[in-house]
Image 1 (cartoon, rainbow, N blue to C red):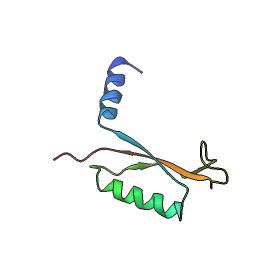
Image 2: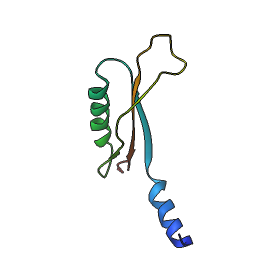
Image 3: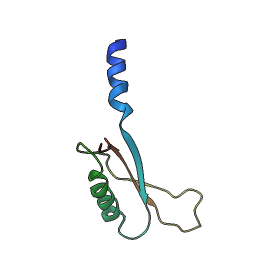
Length: 79
């Protein structure tokens, strides 16, 4: 990557927000989809959504259910 390409890539990311989502209560897939829908309303462009990933709970009470996780990238609305 040239230095000009690196600067363009950096500029593109400067106004990108990365949000991690997670749920282990209730209907986690529906909750994460609803959160993504609400985040879309805050973005000037279509958001980028990861797949949903299941992970074991860490530092949670014994018997806690697994988490469902996702990551969203968005470009915040201006004005």
